[in-house]
Length: 252
Image 1 (cartoon, one colour):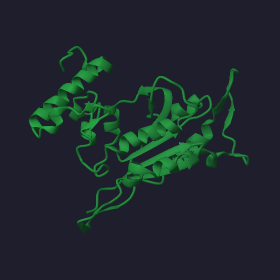
Image 2 (image 1 turned 90 degrees about the vertical axis):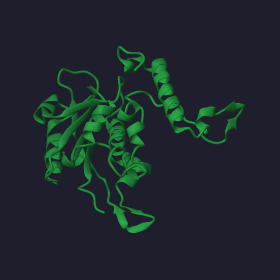
Image 3 (image 1 turned 30 degrees about the horizontal axis):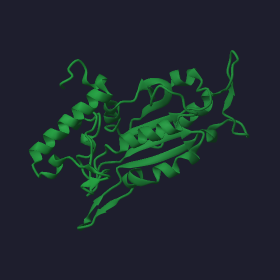
C-alpha cells in the first residue's frame, strides 16, 4: 500500500560528511526505506521521509569555495555570507514544488518542544539551515523570511549540524509508519498520550536484579492497575524532576 508523498527534509551545511552515519542508521534509516510486511509481501510501507544534504560551499562564487568573511565591526570568528546561503535555498527549493518550511538552527531561536516537533511532522517539506562559525549574515536571514529559528537548548555548539540531526530524529519518529508500534511516540515524555508529562519508569526481565525487584503491579496482569500505576509514577517523576511541566496544578 503506497503512502502519500514522503516528507522531504533538506539540510544546508558546510559539513555534509557529518550526516550519513546518523541518517543511515536505526529508525532514521528505516523511515527512508520501503518496508514489506513479513506476512503479506503485497503490503509495502513506502518510505515516509527522504533526506537531502547540500553543501553550502557548492554555491560559493569563488574557486576556493570560501563562504565566510570576518565580521563587520571586528571581533573573533567568521560570518557566513549571504550569497551562498541565498543561492542554495533557491536551488534546493526548486527541486520540489511543495511548499517549504525554512528552519534556521540557532541558539537565538525559540526553544524546541514536543508540540513544535508535532507541528513540523505535519508538513510536506522542511529545509534546515545549519549555521557555523559566528553565525550567518543577518541580512539573508531577513530576506528568507518567513523562517523559523529554533534552538535545542541554552548552550552553544560548534555549529547547527547536531541540532539539525536532533530535530530530524524528533520529527521523523512521529511520521506514521516509522515506529514499529503506532502508539509508541504518542506516549513518550512530553507527548499527548503522557499528558505532556515525563515518562514512567520501565522494567524488563529478570524479575529480580541485584536484589532489586520489579514492581509487583507490572506482573499482575491487571491492565487497569498497571495503567493507573504508570500514570501516578509519571506524575510523581514529573513533580520531582520537572515541576514546571505541571503548571499551577501539582496533581495534574
